[in-house]
Image (cartoon, rainbow over all chains, first blue to last red):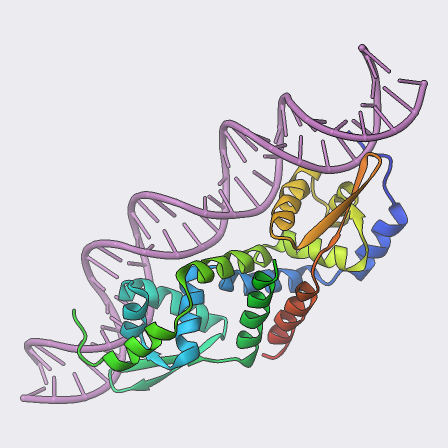
Length: 112
Length: 112
DNA sequence: TTGTCATATGAATAAATGTTCATATGATAC
DNA sequence: GTATCATATGAACATTTATTCATATGACAA
């Protein structure tokens, strides 16, 4: 049950260099947002043009409520921003890193 | 219930430029792997050094079984590779994009 | 104010996911 | 062969999470 063939020096060396717990949790939270196809689709849609909530729903063939819930998550993570025009609210991408992150993921997928 | 103030031309234009459904699902699946703190920790640990399963468990203060389950996911996604040395199996990072992706996430988190 | 449009949100449900526990596999030493 | 070490895996459980439905909010028009 208790392994013997381990390397204690390496373990403590790696432990020392590990980032803070809280940072690693924040990082995982950040990537989790990209880990849902609906949110990925919203980001790709907004990559082309700012869109109101109902138009995003039409592009994705989903309900307004489902889109609104996901936009809230994207908004909290500061991945999208919005502006109001009368009754309509237009959403758009809020960060240049997003495009780069999506591109790197694409690269990884295309090299197999 | 049925909104009137939408933009049909924009909707169809965005629809045309949207990537394939299957690609977007694959992309979400890829990012979902980064969206768990245990897997993020494993990746950061391997960033320093190749490690056997039980030493990863010691670094993260988790059970061997939990680590092994997560390594399977990372292996299937081709984010880690392994080599056998006798009874021991050493895991290491398998892709340069991983480091870049982790760096971009870090940048995003640090600019708030 | 009243009515309508656009969006947001709370509760409920169903599905996905991570960890634990027990056990299996696979390699080495005797 | 048997025993032991290192890792893998299946099933069960608990937690998280995405969508739906109904309803609330908030802005504009009449």
